[in-house]
Amino acid sequence: MSPGAETGQDGQTDHGITGRLSAEDMAYRARALAQAHPLTDLARSYVDRSVAEQRTSQPIPEIGIWAGAAAIGGYCLRRVEESEVGMDLAPSREDLPDLDALEEATARIAAELRVEGAGGHMLGDEDRNIEALDRIIASEVSRRLDHWKEDVDQAAWDELEEYLTWWVVKGYALRAAETATGALH
Image (cartoon, rainbow, N blue to C red; front, side, top):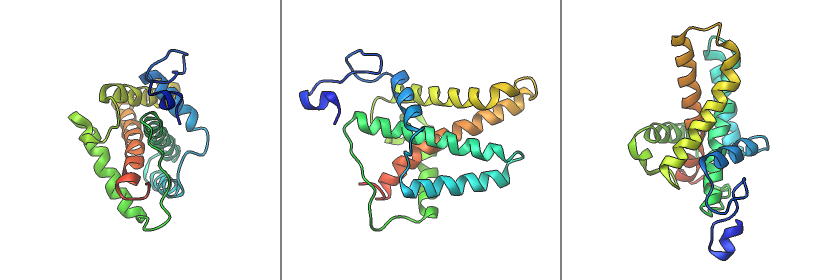
């Protein structure tokens, strides 16, 4: 339970300021959570399968690993958002969707997140959440691509940046899809 939940007031941010989390705080917490074991067993299977597929379909196998890391960042942002609004979700033990059904729901939600209104899938302030997603995306792009700046042309850079963006958004969508499919309750 968050510190503010007991008193009905907002809790402390990561910077010691009372109030709701900023986009910076949310991104920071998501990156920290990603260092733990943040995925449900179903989400872990989904990410493992996605990484395996991406490693064989991309020109450089490491790019598939980047997809998995980016997806976990987005997934963790959704978990931070859930925590902030007081949602305490647990994995279901029965009637879990298969990975294909989860993929279908995840891809649909990810596409809906990229339009105005985010398809109604965000739990909190949309502008703040988009800013937090942008911060995670910028971090992934910097971590994965900055050392290649001199070696790739702008078109390739843009393509890789879009690829990482898609996977961050897809990770956020994965957590939302787990809820939508009944894998979380």
